Length: 342
Image (tube, rainbow, N blue to C red; front, side, top):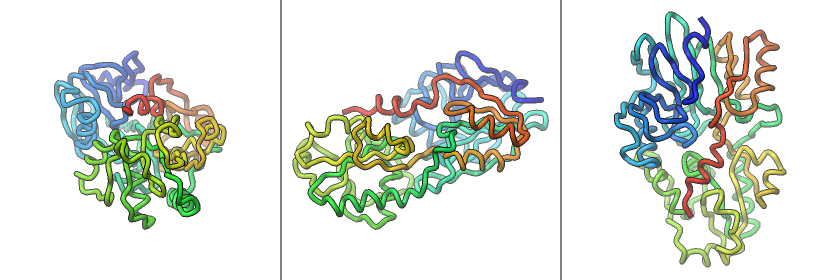
């Protein structure tokens, strides 16, 4: 048995006929298993949703309490029978509540990675490799040029800039789910103790993270009255908010953006970013390759992202690898930017 015997690609997304469920479906379906709360994976309107309790809470915050007719929480490592398939969720290290999904059927194991990273992140549980026969992986940064480096070092660049330009307000573009909270945690870990201003669109998810026991120190909700008195301060805001900062602030705004895409200098220049920080919640090239090895898989399917290089890399190591052309994923940047209200 290989993956094609258990999973089918349908207009609604990846479908398991034996268990009668979809994984991160693109449209409303009778039963959805959701890997994490980003909007390109977690959509509203399903009849039943199975996910970790954190992902369910995040979906409720982003989509409204009635995002599905029926919600069921599953703990990491818990096994659940759906039809003839046993499913379990395992930490993906991407954002709070994120999970890989393991399908077990007739002695074969298939893991769908969702989005994941291998770097340590104090705001969510770390990635755990799951042994499997077939690994279905994302490949957002599936090219050798993408190597993320040390997040603490990137935060050090921000703090050094703040020391060098104390008269300027440092606006840090960060996605509302996961990246903003990780930046807060990294700043506190590096000893930054001053209050941090956060844009109102980031507060609901940050409050939820804190409700789970995480502590980010003193945070101040950004108001229009603050805009003229932010010199020497750090302000977290939606990435799209950086585009017209000059008209919003009198405090000589310095544009900072935290993203794995900041490895590409052209992207930073196009956005007018003065200080790019290469901090990503996705696995880089080395982590993708290491994870494939760690799973021990003999079959690899590569979903959204840069699949060609990773497929070639796996094939040269004797793994039966191919791209799996799922549409609608991997555009989190645009999806999340569109969600971020002004």
